Image 1 (cartoon, rainbow, N blue to C red):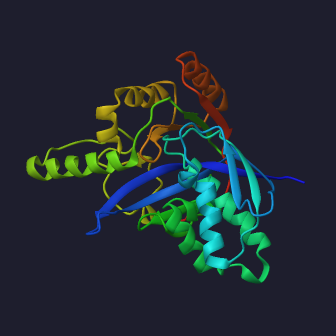
Image 2: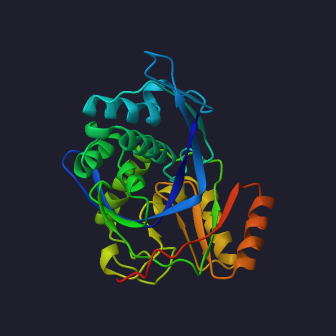
Image 3: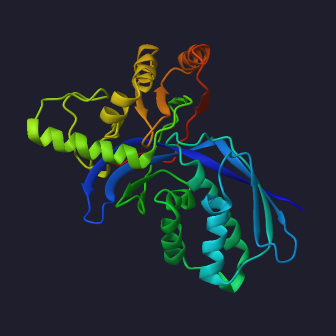
Length: 298
């Protein structure tokens, strides 16, 4: 009998790049929020003896060794010795290259499934988190499965009590791919130029004169440090964000390194109207009423 696993998307309501380490990795502080209604589907069944993990998906040009479901199976098998023969049918509903963490969520779903069945070979929480971080910076968040402030490269998580139940999310997912390595490189160049010229710039989003205050110590502010460089290269994304604000969104912000744009509406009817307008413009849109995960204490 098949096990059907759901691997939900996430959005970054805020993303601040706080440091570039000597090894080239960037440290961030970001508020991650799950989007349960938008999810990839993993159909897991027993595989032929000795087949290890066979992944079938509708992803074009993705060799098995790059597929995060297979990589999660292999990493868990190497760490624990638990290596069941599996056949996994992966149905992608989260667009790739959109900043929504689809691949990382797929990996976390596989790790959850293996961990629940490994018995005495199962990893402790710290070891599992370390293994997950080795697969991708967002994977530990999807293991947690609730809003969290992510620090470091994304692997250090602090669960966040958060009430977003007053908002309807309109998530625009333009068919634009943004490379995360490119985005970090462009951000570094942008910051170096700022240091040389020291311009007085206002962020497009939210509070005037927004600062680099830590996410975990400040009110929830929709902000993404990637926007200045990504919007310069992908003008259509800036236009979508501005359209969402014009259509009545309380805030709008790019997720991750792009290209998805998250807009929060206090009025559900306005959200539905905005979603319709964006679809008329040719953009795939997901609409979801958000959840009360508690009251934020920042």
